[in-house]
Amino acid sequence: MNIGKTIIKARKAKGISRKQLAEGLGVSYETVRQWEINKTHPRHKLYEPLAQKLGMDVAQLLTGQTPTTERPAKYASKLRKVLAHMFHVE
Image: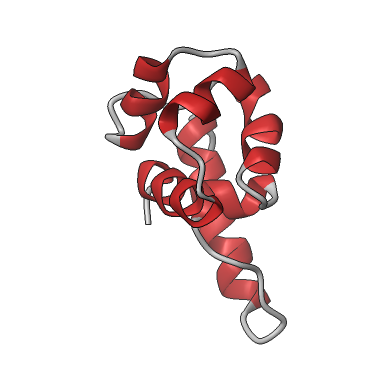
């Protein structure tokens, strides 16, 4: 799952509109819309507040997965790939 889909799914599950999420984060409605269609991504400083508003942690926001005790290696691997892509590191 990509970050846009994760944001949409979590936002709808919490019953939050795009406008409410945007106002809560101090960004525009259009900014949230751009995230949700994966045209842009949130700035790094917004990850924690965005995750909190959506009721998840930053790792869940970035991977779209809930960490489990049954699959920690797979979860960690996915998180490493997401972070490497975001920060252009190997």
